[in-house]
Length: 477
Image (cartoon, rainbow, N blue to C red; front, side, top):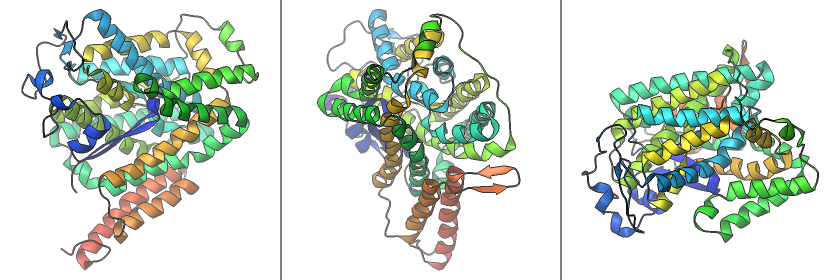
């Protein structure tokens, strides 16, 4: 079914970062200086000194680079001096923070708990991938809708149970990919299917954004204006932090308008353990979470391939480890009250801007997130973000999740003159946007689950029958 398809939304920058079919698109999204890119998209010079293979100079055996010029590329198995490495690591914390704290703010999970497990998950990811794949694991937006539905029907602990199931399935898929490769995933989910599933997840959340927006329309509008202004006015790191900037300024605006309840902030301790909660498992909520597994698979594969294209290192053999690591991190988070994790494009943006791909910076970032998670004061501040601020920022973010699915179609040249592609996309989108629901016994299927199943079934049935009959835009076999 053609080349690998993958997608990732750069929430902190308010932009979309997609990786699909080759190095040309990746080079456009995360450009490096021309002298470091060969004609095949590999990195030349310092970043490819090991012949395109990740170095194995010991688990923590980073080679120290003491002098960094403007165009110097720092490989994953290298690092700058520790003070500079700490500075880069803190940039990664800032880059991930906007999206990572928004997920618990929108789902009702304790923000400090989510930050703690985000940091732990990142360190676990580095351990499982043998400290050679630079990645940060932040909160996944794909779980917002199923968490809301599960919480409404069976309580928050049931949502945590769904997150644990997602992580377990991701581990299983990671093991299979490690042994058999990714070809079966590309066959199961061609671009038209993947794009439809990603798009309907974002568009299904539109009513949630509207509900928050209407609770503070003035503040929400101010946040929207600030977000767009930050993107168009600023370059570099500040431009990448448009979400954080708009939320912080919107929060201050809401404070002036007396829309923020700060009572919990004053009473919260500076240092302490966050709130933990055990999961419970209900068969009725599991179908709500199954589409999330597909999205996390796409996100992780896209991230690994994108980092490989940027560094000139072949990471394909580590994709299985990356999926399993994210699965274990998600299981751990769900077991203690945190959100599902996923690799973050925001941090790819930091690497592209700094040309520092050192995993040492991610050890710093993961450790910093753990320390933030051990501050109830930080969690209380995040918890106090008013609906108006959330409504403004999610109007953008949920729409961008939908656009990312469309971009998958565009990037992969999906031909919508063919009926097989028309029906595979059209029907699931309506099911997801309108949030069709269907109960089978005690099991409740919502719009995301039904739409995802529809995309898979419609495509493969039409592909099989169309190939037999020579119809629906499928060549006759």
